[in-house]
Image 1: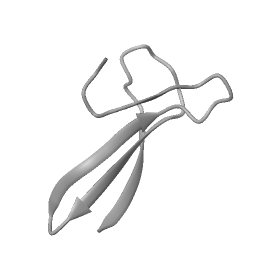
Image 2 (image 1 turned 60 degrees about the vertical axis):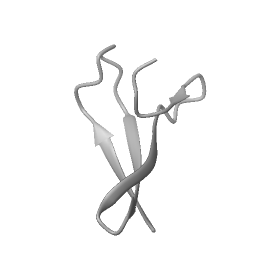
Image 3 (image 1 turned 90 degrees about the vertical axis):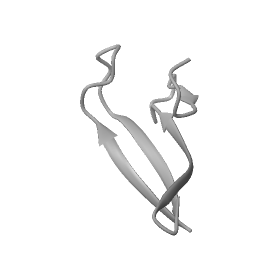
Length: 49
């Protein structure tokens, strides 16, 4: 399994610095999360809350 991290430049709230972590196994996404690394940030799954 590998983890890939990308920055999201078009997050719906307009917040900057939002990242997505994707967990890939055999070319298939098996998990992931969207997060803001700020002190008052957030963390949620790949589906929008």
